[in-house]
Length: 250
Image 1 (cartoon, helix red, strand yellow):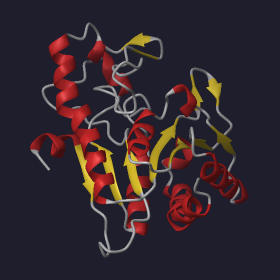
Image 2 (tube, rainbow, N blue to C red):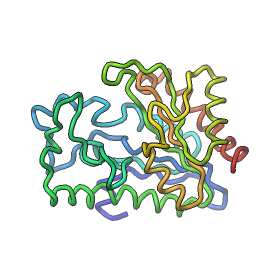
Image 3 (cartoon, rainbow, N blue to C red):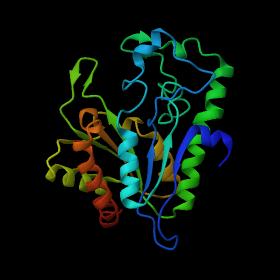
């Protein structure tokens, strides 16, 4: 891994014998709120630090826990989604977010072309190259992308606790939603964001190229920040998701 990738990603290698099929590959696009030098949070942007605007609270801990429990490989971002959002395509709105809570994000105000390219070359592209390498190193493994969402967004309460996002791979997605529902969670399909509207561009992009099934999981942040609540969920996912993918493939 080169210096750019080390700065852009946290890389968790697969554990166990190389001859055994990999259970899963994990990604976490919004794992960190780190703003690397030379960028700095302005006084006005400090309001975004520690909030869902800068990263997905709790997502990194859940991703690492699943990786440890299952011995599977994972790629996590090491930069704030406000620097550049790796779960957006290059032409998608929100790649460089301009507004948060109705106010300008100064980090991205009047973004100069050379600054834009520096962020893409230093963080966005190395993150996606790392996922490509991880999938190549783990042939056949399905992909789970771990995200979290705020319980209240722009004044509206979100009743669902877990969202299962998907496009073509309906059967494993429905099976996971059913299993989580039986475990007592309030589950919604393609909510609070829909993969059909491009809100799972990273897992869709990489898994589809490699012919792998994939799911993006959205976990409400009041669950994701409380270990007593997210640890049982991580254990359930690690124990059962590979079998759900295998049983409901197609």
